[in-house]
Each structure stands twice: as structure tokens, then as C-alpha cells.
Amino acid sequence: MPEPHLRTVVVLAAGEGKRMKSSLPKVLHPLLGRTLLGHVLAAAAPLRADRSVVVVGHGADQVRAHLAEIAPEATPVLQAQQLGTGHAVRIALEAVPDAAGTVVVINGDVPLLRPETVAALVEAHEGAGAAATVLAAEVPDPTGLGRIVRDAAGRLEQIVEERDATPDQRALREINAGIYAFDLARLREALGKLSTDNEQGEEYLTDVFGLLRDAGEPVAVHVAADHVETLGCNDRVELAALRRLLRDRVNEGWMRAGVSILDPDTTWIDVTAAVERDAVIDQNTQLQGATTVGAGALVGPDVTLIDTTVGEGATVLRSHAVGAEVGAGASVGPYAYLRPAARLAEKSKVGTFVEVKNSELGAGAKVPHLTYVGDATIGAKANIGAATIFVNYDGVNKHRTTVGEGAFVGCDTSLIAPVEVGAGAYVAAGSAIAQDVPPGALGVTRAPQRNIEGWVARKRPGTVSAAAAERAGRAGEGASGNPGSASEGEPLHGGAETVGGPSGAGDTATE
Ligand code: UD1
Ligand code: MG
Image (cartoon, rainbow, N blue to C red):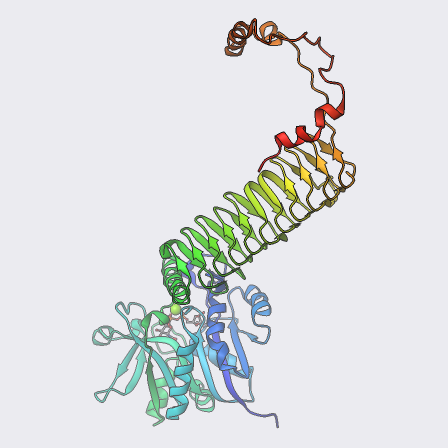
């Protein structure tokens, strides 16, 4: 004989959720870091149930695939036709024939349910030795929900669906939250007796309460401390309302834990994200997935971080990051885009209109403006000038670039991978570097400049430029004048040393 299971959790998730008007099954809609189903499973997780069964039906393959990801220990059970909540539980229990003890049944669409509330329901149920206990709540608007009907002594008499209720019963504001604890053996027996004699022609799980009571079994009501937890989700308007409620709950939690949230109404933190003390989250900020923000960091305004780690004391302004790591004291933005495996060491800087992908920036390295960094390793304290492009893609393969410690790359440079700029090397502004630059060397590929005197007057007569040139020419007469005009094709300066010398590179790099 196998050991009897002491606790079983059954989640009902076979319904279509018609009113969502979605090709995605209702329970897979996301809500601040988890699906609706994920929230319900998380609320039941601390029960440490021996078995979890999820009844699937509509979009069964999608729901099964999601379960395999988030709760591989749960057993999906197919309810091919949605013949009612009672039918769903009956099928679920057929999948666990040896289960005994307490079974907790939860509708799949109550994402604000907290673990503490499920635990309190189970404790009350087991403590009272009840056959069945329903979680109830007083709600301002009970429309569409099952009502808790009590007798004169206040004991549960039955649960009536709104469509089957009398006008008097409809006036009741105490509703069934769709979360229950049952003694499994007595539930099995009662499920066998359900009829479909109701307005929807379905087997109602809720009818079990009346049946048990009529059989003289103890049934109980456990009232939720906060009715908000019991709110279901039937359409996208309700989903949005739940999202706001959950946002407020999450934000309040972080503020009480020592985080400053400057505008809680526009700050959306997934339940899976974490923020340390004295971090400041400015307005219009989303922290999603496995994002963590370190102590004293400043994030926002207008920042979205997905699966991103922000170190202590770092700053991220008006930027978007996915799968990135921002080191302690580093600075990002405004207007930066960090893509997966962008790793910024401590005190490094990624500035304005800079995109970084699959690259490491060493400690104190700077990429201040207008740059693409892809598949690169940039050494500590290196400085990458504005408009540098790490040319990583040859149309078929990606290649890496390495920039050594303390290297200095002038503005408007292409580093054509695979290539290495050595430690302490300089690259002259405007260069296209396709060969390694040894440590300490200056790399320069700039074409010599030539000035073609009088070109504007000849080729663009009558323009604003020509007029300005003429004025400048007159003003300049007698001063420095124009030293011997170069004829077309003749370089003004010949030597690379002159064009790309350290001062040339230094002049055009940026801080
Ligand atoms: C149900 C309750 C109602 C309660 C409300 C709380 C019944 C008969 N009524 O009504 O008293 O106030 O929840 O939200 O139980 N499902 C299946 N298979 C089915 C039918 C439903 O898996 O055959 C699932 C749905 O996916 C959903 C849950 O069971 O997650 C509840 O079903 P739903 O149709 O939403 O029931 P309600 O009419 O809301
Ligand atoms: Mg419902």
C-alpha cells in the first residue's frame, strides 16, 4: 500500500475565459511577473502539498508547456469538455486515487490570493475537522458571483450561483471566492452525487456544500481578511484593475522595506524582482522578471529593466535593459540600450544613445555617447570616443573585439572585428581599424585631408554658404589670408604622423 497523501492541491484552469477575447488561455495572461496560474500556484506553494493537480482544457498544450516550465512537479489533467467546476474536480481526483487528507481547490483566476490566506483557510478547516470549508468575502459588488447563504444561526446552508439565486439571495454581498479546503474522502463521495439540474446544466463544485450539510457533515465558511485577494479575472478591464492593485501591494512592500518610490502610480515592479534599501526608484519605471536593484542605486525616471542586475549606488536614467549587469557605482544613460550579456563593471559608464550587447566593460571604462558596442571586451579605464562602432557582424558570423586596459579610441572609429586594440594604445579619430593595434601604439587609417580652395564660390554660387565664404574672405583679407591653395587631388598634409598624432586623436575624443 502506498502512503496516503496528506495534502493535495487542485487548480482549476480548463476554462476558456471567453470574455478575455484572446487566443491565449485566460490563466496564461501575465500579471507583474507571473501568469495568473503562476500566481495561484505561488499562493499554494507554501502548503508543500504532496500532490498538485492542474485541470487543463482550453489551450491545454500551451498550459501544459507553461506548467512544465514553472511547476514541473504539478500534474496536468485534461478535462476535454468543460462540464463544470464539480466535473473538473472529479476528473482531477481520479488522477490521484491514493490521495487522502486535505485537498485545497483553487480557481485558476484569482491571482491576488496570498499564501497566508490559503494557509489560514487550511488551518481553520483542519482545526475544525470540517468536511468542507469555503473562503468567503464581503464584496462591494457581488455581480456574477456565487452567494454564501447562511441559516438563521449564521451557519452555511448552501452556495448559490447568481443565475440560480432568488432575488433575496442576490442581495447578499458575501460571496464564494472560489477557494476551498475539503476532506478528500468526503469530497469524493459528494462529487459522485452532483446533479446538472441548474441554469447552466453543469456540475457545480459549490453544490457539494449543500449535499454535505444535508448529510449532516460539518461545513464551514472562512472569511478572508481582505476581499481584494479574492477578486477574480474575467476580462481585460478586470485584469488591468488587478494589475493596479498588485502594483500597489508590491510598491507598499518595498517602501516599507526602505526603498524610495517617488511615484508609486507609475512604478511597476514584478513580484519576481527585488530592490535593496535606500534605492530610489523614480517615476515611469518598470522592474521586470529577475531584476534586482542594489542598495542606494538610482533608477529612473523612464527606465525599463528586464532580468537585469543593478549594483549598489549605480545610476540608470531613461534607459532600457534586458539581461544586463550594471556594476556598483556604474552610470547608464540617459537613453542607453543594454542588451543581453552587457556586463558593466563597477564605476563604468554607458552614456547617451549607446547600445551594448554581449560585451564586458572593465572597471571605470567609459563609452559616453552615440556608440554601438557588440561582442567586445573593453578593459578597465579605457575610453571609447563618440560614434565608435564595434563592427561585429560580417553578414554570417559575429566576431569579437578586444580593447585593452587604459586604451583610448578616438571618435567616429570603426573597430572591425576580429581585432584587438592593445593596452594603453590610442586609435586616431575617424579610423577604420581592421588590424591589431599593439599596446602603446597609435592606430590610424585616416585618409589625408585636402582643402580645395574656392570650391564653394565655383560650385555653389548664390548660396548662403557662398555669401558667408565671401564675407569671411573679405574679413580675412590682410590677416592670415589663405596660404597657397591646394589644387584638387593634392593633400594638404602628407604624413600620417601629422594627421593622426596623439593630439589629433586626443582633440576629438570626448569625456
Ligand atoms: C465560480 C463559482 C462561484 C464563485 C466564482 C468565484 C462554481 C459553480 N461557481 O463561478 O460560486 O463565486 O467561481 O470566482 O464553481 N473551470 C474548469 N472546468 C470547468 C469549469 C470551470 O476548469 O468545467 C475552471 C475555470 O477555468 C476557472 C474556474 O474553474 O478557473 C472557475 O470557473 P468559472 O467558469 O470562472 O466559474 P464562475 O462562474 O466564475
Ligand atoms: Mg470565474
